[in-house]
Figure (cartoon, rainbow, N blue to C red):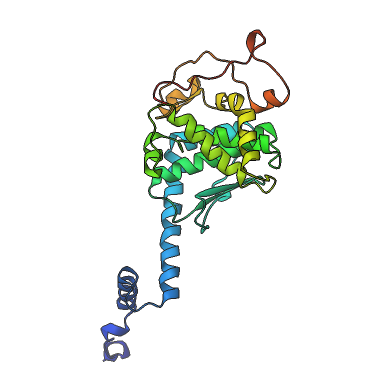
Length: 270
């Protein structure tokens, strides 16, 4: 009889597969884990889910794929490694750094759609920084990008606002965009008080709310891509027949066609 056949059998409690099963059961039930171990496991589960959703959105989300395409066309490609899942405080769902990085706050998303809106929001900030050389210490610049990001990302769709406890049957979209833009500008270290944040948003509101680039228009329910992208993203569109005036045009004192500024009508239901 050889040595292998004479080896004593391994007790089930000592097998690696049993230990893995035991650890998995402890993760699910929380029994047998210390508080630190439970916290580490919770964070790891959140990270894995965030990474999975991120990968799916980067490949299949119409709004995310569309924004990534236009960032690349603008000379600012965004590799997936620049979009990072990380723990955050409870006051935010994501963030953008002018160096070219986006943070997705793992564990803060109720569903993948919430993450999609947040990622699109931050990509709009990145697009503005790339195309318009935004000075984030300038409250008017910051206000303009926040208006655009909140309006174009889906952050202010009706059901999202209903979940926050805000219900309106008239100009709900505009009210949400304005409120959230003021909150974001108020958090800028260069902003002295809420009045200054509100003033900055009001000063650029018409121009920046009407500037939907790189989209053709903003809809309360869906994204509307330019005509040439419809085959790729299967999105409905309509020509709105307006001259888009950006925050750059505003700050430079430029006017639209026929010497006056023309702005986007956000459409029915907004």
